[in-house]
Amino acid sequence: MSAATEPLAVAGELHAPRAGIVSLDNATGHKNMQQLIQLRWFAVVGQVATILVVHYGFGIRLPLDHMLQVLTCLALFNGVSLLRSRSPRRVTNGELFLALLVDVATLTAQLYLSGGATNPFVFLYLLQVILGAVLLKAWSTWTIVVVTSLCFAGLALFSRPLALPLDHDRGLWSPYVQGMLICFALNAALLVVFITRISRNLRARDARLADLRQRASEEEHIVRMGLLASGAAHELGTPLATLAVILGDWRRLPHFSSDPELLTEVAEMELQIQRCKSIVSGILLSAGEARGESSEETTVSTFLDELVEEWRTTRPVEEFDYENRFGQDLPMVSDSALKQMICNVLDNALEASPHWLRFEVAHDADALTLTVTDAGPGFLPAILKEFGKPYQSSKGRPGGGLGLFLVVNVARTLGGRVAVHNRPEGGAIVAITLPLAAIVLEEDDEEEEDEETEAIGTAKTMETKTHDGNR
Image 1: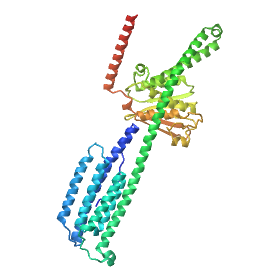
Image 2: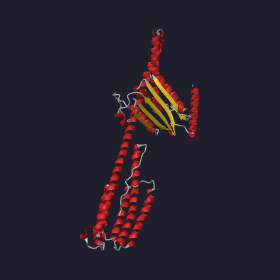
Image 3: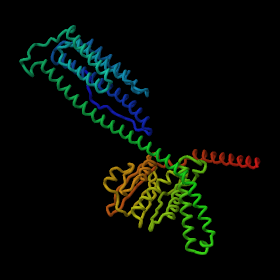
């Protein structure tokens, strides 16, 4: 007499989409096993109560010793199942199928001892079939249908009927009709609860699977963008170097050297070319090239202060309020991806509000909070709803929205989050929260970093001596 009281639970929130799907299936199998265990305990308690009420309340004699022996075997099997559910090994369809067959066998034994096919609770077989349809593969479900049908037929052929008077004409006062009513109400109530909760959890599982697929698509998109950016950086290196040489030649020409205004423009052009070369170098560093130069030890406040100073001097911002309330400084390694993420947010805010920006840094518990505030038109409702999705932009140009898309993905990779909302007085606020554990150096990390730096320095020294010897 199994019953369903709890929904199937779905778990699994992993970083890699493929691993997430595998873990989701594994966790679902364990939750299904736990579900059957809970149903079995409910069945044990329900059968004990039913047997006692029928035997002593209705005065219908039942073989209590044999029926309690069956319940003891069911409880022992449930204890073994409980130990199995605690094992990290994947729960297979075969194990769930075997568990349901045991439930069918114990239900058949109890019905055989209490009237067989004439027992009003014989229709609890339907619950076993429904459980199989929800939890098992198709072939297993149909096997459950065949087994329960054969058990029903066997009970009709070989079991003894209950010693119940044929008083159906008494309506609800008939014990048999009362048993049928209880069985119907139990089946109906459990089916409603079970199916409703299962449907809700299946929808939640589908939503998680959709999220995993979306993340896989976004990661693939980022990889393609990284490859394109790396290739473009390589291709841009030569023309930028050529332009730098040409501008250097122009600076020495009499026509330019005698005209201060032209010299100023040439200097500005060289500065912008140098900035382009720095951007290209940053792309290559982010792609994993020239890794020996890609990181250096610093502190959180120093990193942010230098980033702000560099950004302020290279952007045409009129009024920029910067407030660093980080407090006690902590060591970290300069990260080009983190730097690019912050610059993307500042660039987007500057484009929306060229007259005024505010950048705040705060230390909240174990997290670093970066808040960018602007006085622009704010985000459209549709953009707020789909924030962080690629190509969601109000700028109306091809490729728009990729900056914030990358911001969200970098923050998510570091275990953080990005929150956005519009200000009542106009403008928008973008708040980035990052766990300090993802960016701050621990003592062991500092020692490893020092050893790595020392090893790189030794290798470079040996390489220099080797080149000197070859010369």
